[in-house]
Length: 81
Length: 147
Image (tube, rainbow over the protein chains, first blue to last red):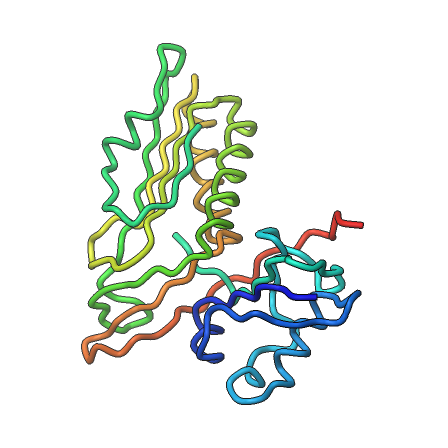
């Protein structure tokens, strides 16, 4: 299955990209998305192992099962206001 | 109730005009502005990045919770993103309620929740033009509701 992965702020700088299309095995979780990404090396390897994740624009735990076409985002600690 | 993420400059008076009612005896307006110093460093400007679609939803959720808390639907909040200069308004919150305690409480709730969970990040520029992402807070993650 294919998902759209979004990276923001500091994480986007580390990865050198803000938006990535990612191929995943069926049944993959949000945590698997992070593992796949980190194992692709380069700046991705410097992303944290357990970042805050949003699935389809809602905060979600790392054991959330991902579905084809989902929008998954890795979010650094937030600093609005 | 209104909640909005915008790239345009914020007019506090316009946000204030979104609230108020003949039933209300208290109106609170909070403005967050860009400071010229942070952690002892001189700041020349700030850039706000956002997960825009999610931020819009989270902000609307926060405004809704504040309205329930205050027992008033007169809650308005606008958060600016993009490039801001020192003194610019980054966030405006207006609440009106029959009595003052609820208005102060709800306005405080909105800014505290923004800091806690709005997916927005800020990068400050220093005198040398170097940019630096500011430390933030780790938002609370609810248990998954999906099957």
